[in-house]
Every structure is written in structure tokens, then in C-alpha cells.
Amino acid sequence: QVQLVESGGGLVQAGGSLGLSCAASGSIFRINFMGWYRQAPGNQRDLVAVITSDGSTNYISSVKGRFTISRDRAKNTVYLQMNSLKPEDTAVYYCVLDQLGGSPRRVWGQGTQVTVSS
Image (tube, rainbow, N blue to C red; front, side, top):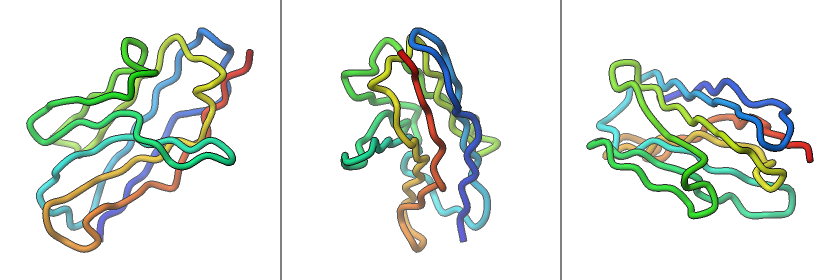
């Protein structure tokens, strides 16, 4: 079974920076992508950024130029560097691993709170 352990997050003032990391362990099948979603109170869980097995990245438009997703393939770890944070970035951030095979195919982290004060 695959486990995801997240770290980082916390409270920061608008304009500040935070970093998140997510380490995957266990019986990992071939990774399709890893990434981050976020969910603010009363909202659905939305994609923030993903990085595929070949290193391609994709971001939601609202974080382009401010957030950077990266990975350490040897450590099965994905990172999210968040700069120029805005109050609207406040949410619980969830790490996700999507694998080609295995069960479940998509694995979620426990979530970490990011709060940006104005």
C-alpha cells in the first residue's frame, strides 16, 4: 500500500513564501503523476499543480508564475514552492499520487493547512 506524508504549510502574510513536500512510500506502481490539490472551506477540491513521469508540469492559471512544482524521483518526493502568496491561496493542500496500476490508482495525502493573512 502507498502512503503519502506531507510536510510544510502554516501561516504566512500576504506576499510571503511557503514550501510543501510530499514523500511517497510503500508498494508504488509506475507513477503517472504527482501533484497538489487544494480545498478551501465550502469549495470543491481543485487541482493546483502536477508533474508527470516525464517531468512535464501543469498549473492552474491563478498560480502560474508564483508556484513551482518539482520532484526528486529517487526519493519519490514532490515539492511545491509557493511565492507571492495571496489570501485566496488559503486552503488545505492535498498531495496526490496517480499510478498506472495498483489499487487504489490514486492516493491522497492527509492534507496540510496553508493560511495567508492579509
